[in-house]
Image (cartoon, rainbow, N blue to C red; front, side, top):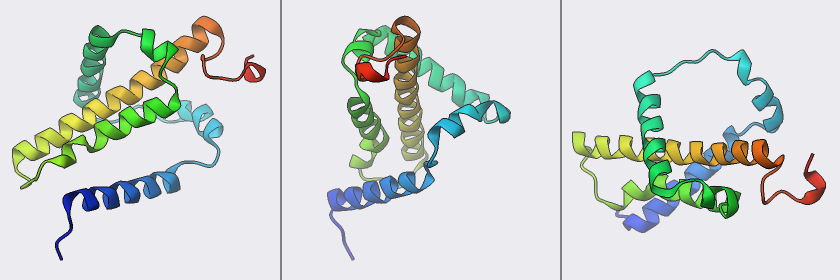
Length: 138
């Protein structure tokens, strides 16, 4: 059965969103508070690559838009775009295709880190993010 690439992309995206919804803890605050219980693991090279991409992003864009315009909806749009952009090309699953996928995932992780950094930076400087309602500000 042949499926148009955009239909396939939509089906994969829908599947990914459903998986993400199932994987997310019902109590995010509890999971954030429990992070210290888990030792650091993973390939340091991957994390180094993410941080290098973050450095490039900071040089290109700075922090002003992140801290004054990019609300959670925009961050999610950027993250979604980065994570599925590589799907637009046909793939033969060559080494080059896999390298492109790796690069897309590194870029996606770096954008995720930028979103988290923006929240931390705004709360450290102002006590709240620009998009949080005044009643929730500590």
